[in-house]
Length: 252
Image (cartoon, rainbow, N blue to C red):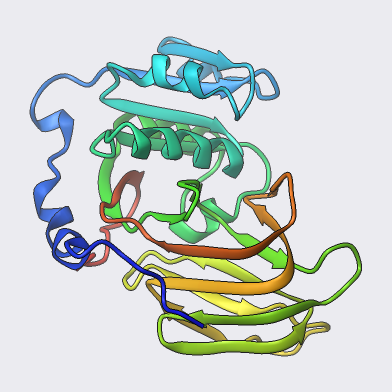
């Protein structure tokens, strides 16, 4: 398996990213935009802000237009919507924007970052401090905030191999692989999906590269539209800024 090819300047940029970022609230008054979709209700505490109800998570032009002058974006919805917003901010080189998250329903990202729910989440998103965390993406430029899974096509096992950085995660037929972001460096961890309640072996790294005969890929509960044979997830060269409760761990 060939290790993922990365930009030569990535290591240096990753080391300096958290020092280069300055919260927009320190420079000027924040322009707050609340982003949601028609599938979710906007909490009353946020209705006095500018609220944009997107047609869906794939509404790229709508996300770009709504966040064009935002200093803080508050996402009300699920992990898929949060990932979609971060994907657009990354592609527009606007990761310095503060991002608050008010999860609706189950959320792996909420548990990962220790975020509250309900009214407490709204209050935090409005007035909390944004801190830098590693941003995980794949080779298509799609961000993952909670979890990504790779399994075989249909009911078949996935036959191939995967490396986390230079360490072999698996080789041969397996049920599948799960990838999750981490709050601290190196940025992600991956595990073979096991049957039953056996303890799972997690490998941490900055990248995972997988090759197999057929991969059915799901990111934050959104299925990729076609079967692929290769997939790579890795830490982006810049962090994202999450409005959170606790002091962020070092990101360099």
